[in-house]
Length: 186
Image (cartoon, rainbow, N blue to C red; front, side, top):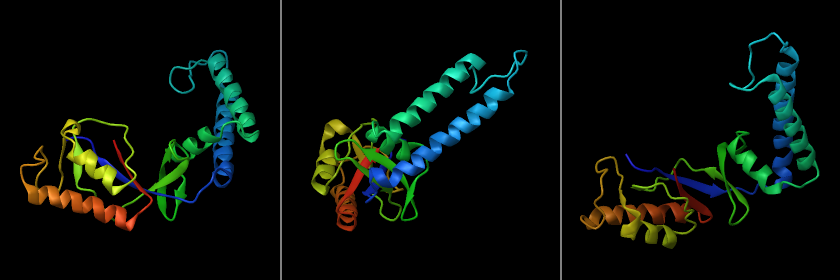
């Protein structure tokens, strides 16, 4: 099938905006873990999180509590931003915040109304922040990109110029609508 392209646009959310939700998430994790640990008796065959003994669960609980203290002191700003995007199901403007971009420090939300019509054979970590960058990526044969327009889903870049134009137009349409957009892969 190949690697999907994902379309995102920058949100105005800042560290201060997301901090309370991330702390709330960590506190909830601590509460659930404490309840579970307190219910385990020495004779129990129960394990926390699959293969975790009571002693290991207590250690994990201490780690979570230390993480909260570090977050509250402002020591983990990038980690807080990543946690908001990865695990708290944060939202902005009705869409899931799905990505933290290390290169510029912004959170991005998913875009569901514009579709970039290509995929690639490998799973790159690239973040494409402009139409020019995305077109260069698509046209580079080393990236093994192909048209994905629900009719053709196999490598054909360069074989059918009208389909390449369709892909390049879809890239332009995305960045025209979302000038602060980003394309990722996964």
